[in-house]
Image 1: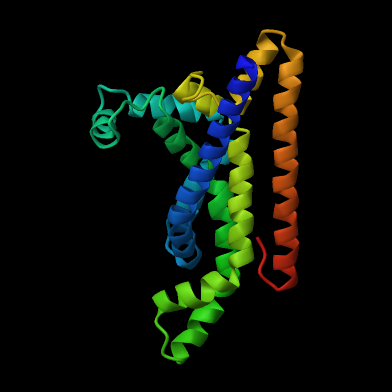
Image 2: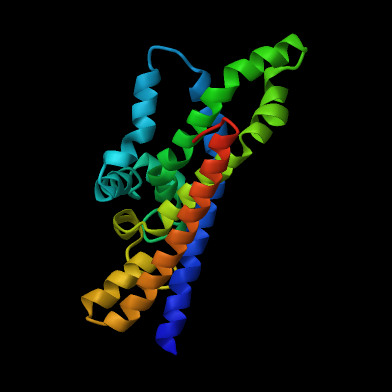
Length: 229
C-alpha cells in the first residue's frame, strides 16, 4: 500500500511538473517565438542557437550550471530565496525552473516555424486594413496557428515527462517533493524491484505514446491547412 502511495505521489508530481512547465513555456514562448520569427538582425543565429542549446547540452551539465548560478551564496541564489521563499536546490520551484529552460526549444522552435509561415503575409494584409500588429497577433495569428500551438504544448509536455538528469541534479530524490516518475523508476531498478519498475515504465510509455499520437495528429492537420510545425 505504501509503495502504491509513493507511485501516485511520483505520478502526480510528474504531471504537475509537466503541466506547469508547459503553461509557463506558452506564456514565455509565444511572444519569444513571435519576436524571433520577425527578427532579422545580425544576432538572430546566436539567439536561435541559445534557445536550441538544451537540445545538444547534456541535462546534467545544464543542471550543474544552474546549481552553480543559484547556490545560496550567489546573487541569483539570494534573489531566488527572497522571491520564492526557499532555496533553489531540493525544491519543486527549482526543478520547475530547470524544466522550463530544458524544454524551451521543444515549444519555441515549432512556434517559430508556424509564425514564420504566416506572419509576414498576414501582417502586411492586416496593415492595409488598418489593423495594428498587436491586434493581428491576438485575433489573426493565434487563431490561425492554434493547432501548431497545441502541438508545441504537447511536445513540451511529453518531453518534460521523461526528464531525469536535470531533475536529479537540481531536486535530488525527495518523495512527494522532487521525486518524479523517472527517478522513482531508477530507484526501483537500482534496488532490483523490477515489478514496480515495470509499472512505472508502462505508465511513462503509455503517456508518451498518447502524447506523441496527439502531436502527430495535430501536426498532420496543421500541414493540411498550410501551417506546419
